Image (tube, rainbow, N blue to C red; front, side, top):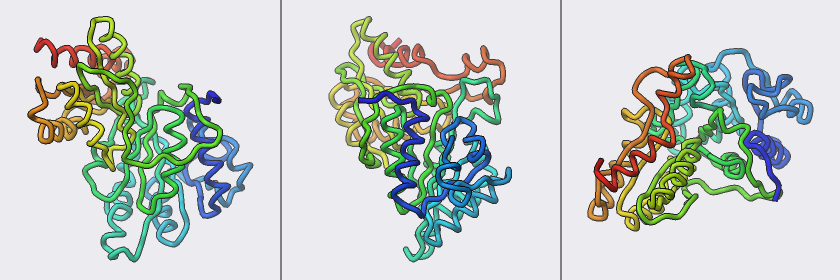
Length: 326
């Protein structure tokens, strides 16, 4: 088994998919000659040419709108938003056009669009470049939402994204690009809506996605030293959402913690907590605990940023609370 970085796995998926399907076109700011802000598209312009790797002006509303139009007309574009925060600049194109076109046309028009972007804190990029906005996309029906935590998942899920006929928002975390993991050389697409159990346990279930899965696994190691067996579930996609895997785990452990980096208030963890409570209430021995960022704009100061974002210790404390009510 080869070891690749998260960014290498993404690049490999792009190359394989572009070799497979000539209708795939990449669009975005600095994705060509520069190779992308996080070097995921490095070398792709030289390999596939300027017609398929398109440098765009700094106008998210413009190139996302163009990508929606290309998707409607038979191409399979992948548009890269340099930072998730810039999704608001293209909000109409994403939320009112891409997400709704198939339903509004009675199925006559499909929008097989992939939007790659990255989010999250940890680099001192401040409030306008560090947000985690997946809950906003989850609130608007019509778009698949993918948040891989490992290089292998990043490759397999990106390959699947290019096989979807609905728009996909593919969300990476900026601190995952240099993480490493085993990635098969020949890898099939990973179907959406299939969570994985990253660590088995019996006392409490920790449900997460994206980089916070790594925090959850670290928290589980700490809890193990305290005699607490934590099961860690990586959702991988939040739409479609694999509640069956979550509920099986909760019915075994009788306790649940949901953890993510986005703000705790109205974050996706609130939806998860509600569904667990609705669907597994009689199995719960304690209320579902939620872990998320503090409800303040992400600070530029890295010590303040660290104090704002959830850590493994926050997850440990939440898990212990479900067991000891303290």
